[in-house]
Image (tube, rainbow, N blue to C red; front, top):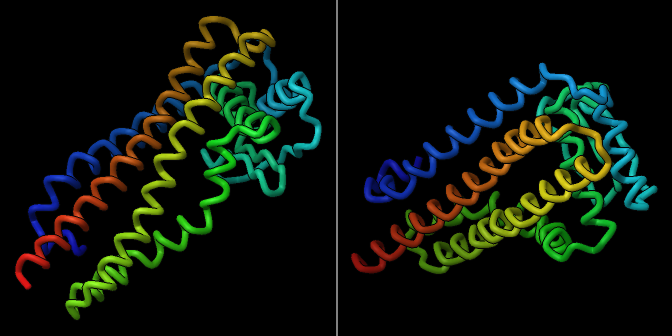
Length: 229
């Protein structure tokens, strides 16, 4: 809501906001479309992930079911791969499972960007929660130090979104390569998987764009306040 009091920042935020809406539409529509299309191999998402991990020599990852649609993720701390549709034989579910298996492979092989992202999670969460309250309080009471702390804390959250990009892109490349080499999908189905994962990747790009736009808005507001003081 702070942005409403500074209309000049909307020039930064509106394009990022529209991109985020478009990205959410793309991922949901692509996932819903290919959730209705079974793979020719009729392999389940769980079995596909298990096969990818086994072929890579990764045997310490537990696959669990979750109820949150599109909430699929890999937890490196507990070595849990969580799938929202583990028993689905659809192209979408198999593709997403392969992507999450890609994260498990990154973890097992010491992929540096994943290690960095995992390390900065606490700082990024802390920064995203406290940045705006401190920034607003600093503006209200003209406390430059609080404004600067808010900007620094939010910068950590922005850095997290940027580090996430290579992690997600690399996991998708690993997923596509694993699906092709294991023969789990046909070439036509591989194109559908690429569409689903590409749409999912766009959501991360949109998230990074929104975070950068917000940070630039904070810097713009702060610099304007300093000029007036």
